Image 1 (cartoon, rainbow, N blue to C red):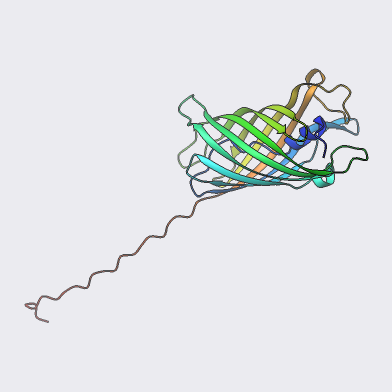
Image 2 (image 1 turned 180 degrees about the horizontal axis):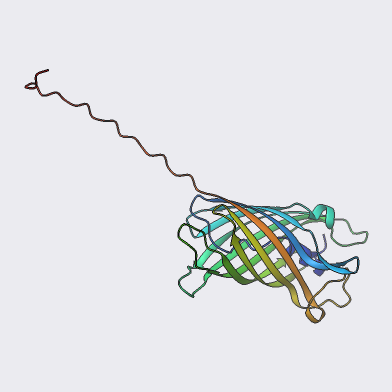
Amino acid sequence: MRAAPVALVLLSGCMASRAVAPLDAGQHGVTLSLGGPFVQFGGAPVPVPFTHLGYRYGIDGHTNVHAGLQVSTPLLVGVAAFDVGIARELLTAQGPRPRLMLEYTTTFAVGDASSGPAPGGFRFFQDLALVATWDLPAREGRRPHRIYLGADAFMGVGPSFGAVVTPFLGTELRASKTVGVQLELDWHAPFTRTTFVAPVWYGPGDQGVVGAKLALTFYVPPKRPKAVLRPRKARVADPEEAP
């Protein structure tokens, strides 16, 4: 598979950020993300309908491990891909100070996103993201809504090097204790001129390409340990007590 800028942008724009907040220790999260870079379709800008299915697990309340599968890329761009990674909370949120999380992910891909006679192949990519998150005030017993911003560097390291930097801004709205709705806006490759790139991409001043994603996360609370029932001690009858 060729490390063309188009392929890097498409693969980097498949999922919403997974480093918004750490999960509780032992907690699970399943996320379905839809959307991607805006391209021209029927003369109008339309986000590529990339679909990504991801899983997260909370290690200690500060660290998540995750894995994911690109569901739609085999049909849309001829590339099958899955990823594994880890996210760590570097700084906890306190008052106006945001939470700061660092995410590292490796994506494994097979196929060819470029046209031409060159055969497809296997490649892997490195992804590094830094995310700042503000938790909004919440009522007692409710999970907070969140807003976040950050930057992502998606890199192809072989046989040739290529990189796409993506600033992003988003929010997670909690529909309930177990469901989060995530909206995210991205600006892929803002320093790359895309005037003559096909397909037609939409970016401010023909620089890079903007994208949008909608994600639903289903949170599964950690299992609580079962209470250990202590056996009651048998009451010893007082010999002086008469029936």
